[in-house]
Length: 150
Image 1: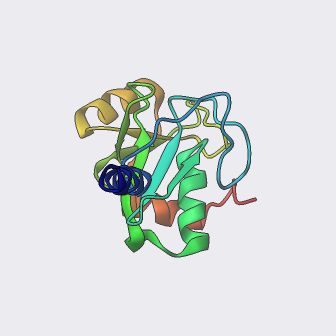
Image 2 (image 1 turned 45 degrees about the vertical axis):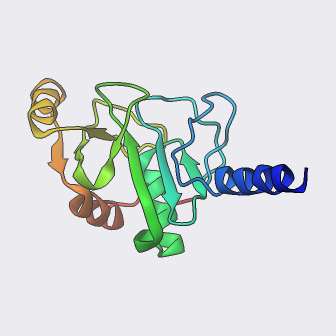
């Protein structure tokens, strides 16, 4: 009896320390930066720390502002943005291509969207205009032109 209780406690502890990405409950959860309800599956973002804590955002710009404020990007196991072209799908933000186009509104007014690959980003750019950036470039761009820093 004691052995099975110990095993149950061990399993519960391991599960609670999971470093997995948790699904976002759209329309229910609030952004960990601006506190707005997360509703847009094309622009949401998410962080998972190396200790397994999940932070969820209504927009990539909120995630970037959160990282800048907390100054802890190196502690993140996952840095994810929603793929604008595949709503609800989260992609690695460090490998994403970002577009800032005034023809594609985002929740916080930065007109920032993430795309999984360069060719799709170029197709979206041809259709909507705008400029393309990688992860480091988009962080610098938001520092130069901050509109959503609450």
